[in-house]
Length: 124
Image (cartoon, rainbow, N blue to C red; front, side):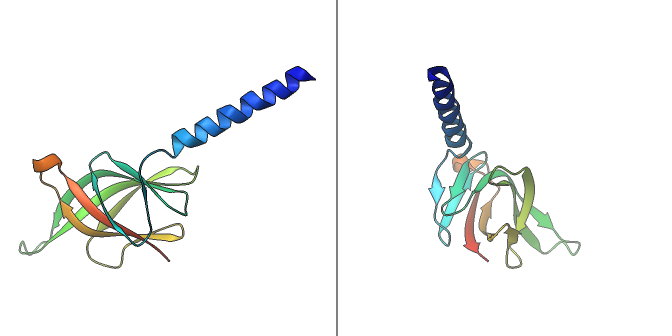
């Protein structure tokens, strides 16, 4: 009987460590702006949403005079699969679960630790 309870404690400890590892990183509050550098990851408070910045760039339109900054993100809702999300500055943002991801500012420059993207996460 003693061995069985010890095994349960070990399994619980491994589970807690796995959850803590999966959801590591800085936490941000919904509705507040935050800036990410390429490769950085944040968790959104009050949800199981994690966001990592993969790339920042500019879309050029056919008329050649208009550009739109964009950010490529990897998002994960809870223990679900990861998905790539491209967020532009036009429109009202991209839905992810019960949240909306909106790009506020994007700087694809490699200077000063770039590229960077400023985002806002809001509830639907």
